[in-house]
Length: 283
Image (cartoon, rainbow, N blue to C red; front, side, top):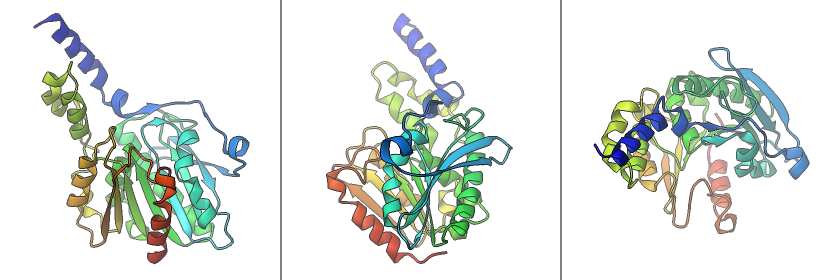
């Protein structure tokens, strides 16, 4: 084995050991404060995961007099809620509460992130989000998964006892299999492509969504950016095809990149999303 290949193998094993270094890139520091930078009020929410780990989130109340529902945000793999909230907080101007939270190891949440742990966090966050919905105007209950958060939410939802309460499930720029994404990334690396088959050995899919997504029965919106270089659109299309729910939509954004559906093209997709929400009955 050549030296470059040995170095590649060492790098590969270190990089993918335990999966955490690849899929979970948390930051403890809060980068933005909604009050200071945007004059947005929020409630600090502390709740416990299914194994007792303390989790933290923010709850933004709808500004409109009539509360239409509550959105629960499952954010992506990097940083924490202090940067991710911004992508969906615009919805509070249109009658929707927003609950965003950090998985274990992110922001002010305790512990460290791993597949089983974030799965348990997801179940707890769904419970917490539903309680917040019930105590803050009722209305529709929307689960919104972005990138890694889409996989986490998609894996947990079929096991959640209140799955029928979800009015709409949104999967934005996401994937169903950790192994498939890892294989894609490695196979496109000039240094490590020859190691790509090993992704199916060292990466676990025990808590991935691909084996359970056919159990989702809620209305589902899948969003893919056709110029997304982080999670290519093919992964979202695989999810759309695998869903067995009666109501599902696939939005293919021609100029869309990663999780930018409502902030590019002059926000042209905000209107259609609000229209879709209005058409759905509360649960």
